[in-house]
Image (cartoon, rainbow, N blue to C red; front, side, top):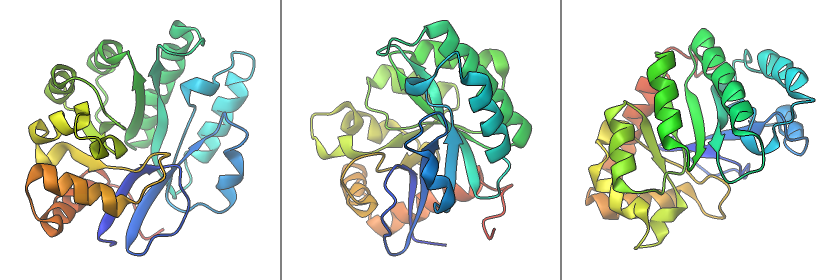
Amino acid sequence: MASLIDIHTHNQTVENDVLKIVNIALNDPKDLPKLDYVGWRSVGLHPWYLNEETVEEDFENLLKESENQKVMMIGECGLDRNIPVDFNFQKEVFIRQIQLAESLQKPVIIHCVRAFPEVIALKKHLKPTVPMIIHGFNNHPQICQQLLDNQFYISLGAALSKSTSNATKVIPMIPKEKLFLETDDKNCTISSIFALASTYLDVRIEILKELIKHNFNRVFSNQDLTA
């Protein structure tokens, strides 16, 4: 296995010794060409592009694509209060994707903006057994603790480059077994994110690589990584 793992990215450039999971929003037409050439991937219906007129067609496409052996996670999917899409509609589609992930026994990668109480409440209500990963977390320590108390994984990214960010405040409080790292859509390398994280955690980068690899193997233990 590669020594560096990028749990969530939109960047398809090749990096040596990096396993990256490239996100594909199936309800964003600009993302669909990725299906022809991207390797390991997550597929989902992103809240930004939800449309009540096309959601059933989009969900049928998700059902079809989600069984591909290259699909490691469902998402990114979730809730976002900063967009004009009806919030209850967002919740309905998010619930369906959690249920799909549970039926396939694949983790969920979550986009959440100003809706953490609702995401936590849905997890408590639905009781999924699959891992749920909050991607690109950069919010208050209190919210981070609530997520950890409810067994979410936390993925941190480019916000670590700002010494005053919430990401730098929360990284010491995240149990090592709940941590992932990512590049998301930022113009950076995963090796630079690992370097920042190792500094804030005061651990050698080689140890951090092993910690993240261990988390990865645990979260994806039921998937065939040789496909």
